[in-house]
Length: 403
Image 1 (cartoon, rainbow, N blue to C red):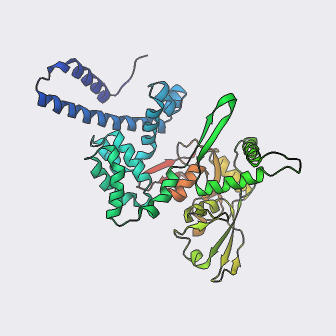
Image 2 (cartoon, rainbow, N blue to C red):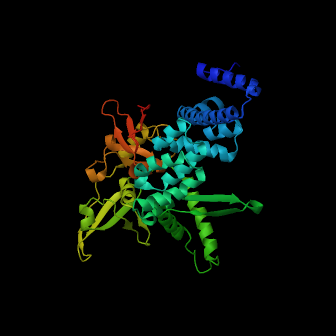
Image 3 (tube, rainbow, N blue to C red):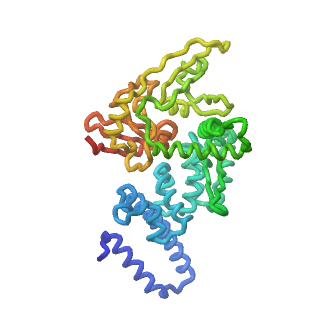
């Protein structure tokens, strides 16, 4: 089958072939260096173009449609990229649009892919400081090696008078979250990782409940009971196939807060869980988005001022109707994640009702993005499509395809 290419790509391939054929024509030492530099810039720009093409292909589901593979699988199995190289490309595919100045410098051939990866690592750890610091980081990256970027971030924050320990630590912990499950001998597996405060609190509570001794004759060690408890948690999830809850709100959240915090709409205050872990106000709002929320308000002496009543939750009929309307898919376009939480498009604290028009099923990741990742979600009043707007103004739209 003939390969179909666009005219610009066809011309590029022909130019590369001609350049390779005429490679011995360069004689001057100065010309050799100049041409090597020009080729390096061209390679960098082609790398940026490659990332954009892969992103376009992924958004169009091209690897799955043509080859029956994921995008990362296509990179490894069709282009024979190493696992590390494929991960780097996919990281650029997913994260680079968040940083438009980094993207522009990469497209212009001013910084390499190694610079891009180092810049994204640094910026991912800076939270609300990203927009302020990104122009300075990109400017510095044009004049330094990728490995020098981390040290420049420290010096820059110190110059700006910003306490890096307090401003960056929490964002860095979030970026470094992860879990590894590696096979060992005889089919055993080793588990290790780092959990965020919210996931750690949920996991610890579930594990504590699932690993209770079964009676006086239970001679398992605490570690053995926790192992078996983890198996019970996994079986419970698989038994429901991870299906979303249609029987009302999946959790009840009792939020205890002081009156001042409530009146300030939580703002950016950190809230403390029962086990001492802290979560952000945005995390608390996300938890409460698809929950039966009961506020307990404390006065100045920690006396209970008011115990509120649950309200504006989605009922069973609304949850089922929204699931059918959205085709059981996350409202973010192209998302393949399993939906688990029903989101209030107009937030509850802004008076958002528990109605079908205000409901959107989301996967865990995109529910996090709309509460804590800087994205906003709206419904188009005309065609009822979902309109997403990112922290830097980028927009994505998902049109409903079900009745």
